[in-house]
Length: 157
Image (tube, rainbow, N blue to C red; front, side, top):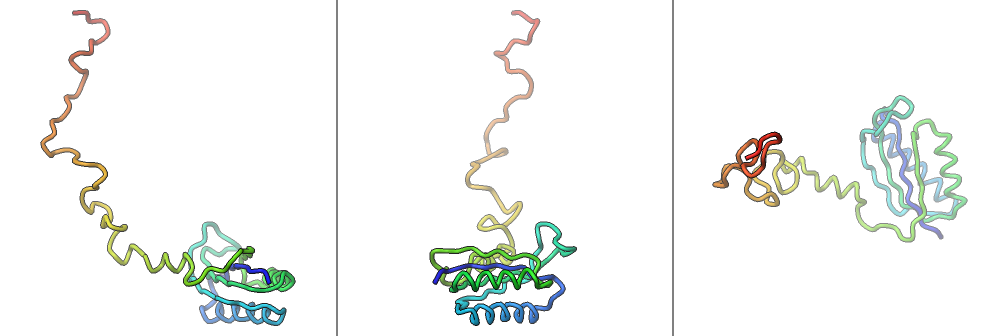
């Protein structure tokens, strides 16, 4: 059977339990159509890039699906009808990703928990190694104004 990844966004005013129930209903629909859901990930409540039906946030859910195309068509039809689903996207993939998705890995590598951005330690966290020594480290300052070898227009020596 073909393999699919499907992500849908549920309304922001749903509780996490209601979102889990919604994903369970989708999983049950796929099973009744002869497929199976191999992985379900709740990505949580996230900000949307733009407002969708007066919602600024949404609950994101990822489903890895092994099902015939008729089951996917029925799943998308029910998502279109359901008012709790703001958007959905289903793509066919060659193989399903094992382990946590990129969104969950990103949450594990959250730089805010470390107190800064990556290894640098945030803004003003010290000198950047790729810029070398800049200013105040024994390097003479370049004089301001025209260089001595440059003649100002109108003046001839």
